Length: 379
Ligand code: GMT
Image (cartoon, rainbow, N blue to C red):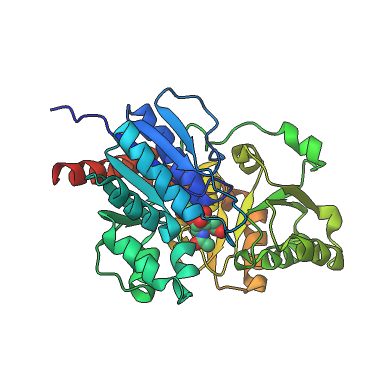
């Protein structure tokens, strides 16, 4: 029997970030499968760039009344969720990030008194950073336990959630995924000239929100060592609180000629397609979506052996895993990979295989669909 198409509300942080990217890609793919998708967020999610008649967007407006010391975003979100549940007759809400989204969804359910199902996906920092803040632990546990289903983006994140939050609730692993139509090797060689990258130069890339947890200084330091033996340029993509100190470090190390700061960028597949190596050297990373997207474009990655990164990078097969802060080893492995054409080609092919085989969109989106239908069937 054909399953009925669902009406699904999706809430995420809409600005640049892996959780917002995955929530939006998921919504787009579900819409292509015929489901009706209602994004409920404070602004249009940044990857919602394609028109689809099954996708709707509902903006959360936060009242700035002067009596409020803090604007009541959470209440406004719950209220908007309740309004959309009632008006659009939603079957379920899928919220990304426990705080405050799961808690808001539970509140919205109570406000509209409907048997709507709530699915919460944990992405990482909601547990690995906020989970350690005792002012939020109870709220995170409440959001998890009162959701109808909870997923996390890696086995490591599931383990950490039980360790830190200790919820009495099963948590399923549903890995992040790639849109194979976008993340593939494309011809972006024209960019080399525009960026002033010489033909013989290798390209190393790092993409992040430049928060301290990303350890961008380790990226720059290991690149500087690598660049002593390999002719290469470093593309730094993204922006954030560490940017100033990173610019200073690049100058101090005397490598400003070799480093290209690109700021926030769309169409990352074009930048990956001209890259030879990605560095993701974070101290916390529940998954590492940027590594996966780069791998899908044929870029081997060196990552730190932390969080969910080892679930994406297979050491010695499609990239390397190194200890946090071990810039000497990172530089040595990076340089040897960049200098060995045939090893690089082998890693590159394996990176694409891993991305497509283990993190393909069809499989992952079907996993989410199954969770939705199981909940709805079980009333
Ligand atoms: O990494 C960030 O700072 C952004 C953060 C987010 O909430 O968007 O990313 C988290 O979710 C991504 C999507 O699931 C994961 O790929 C990232 O590994 C995870 N970040 C951390 O765990 C630090």
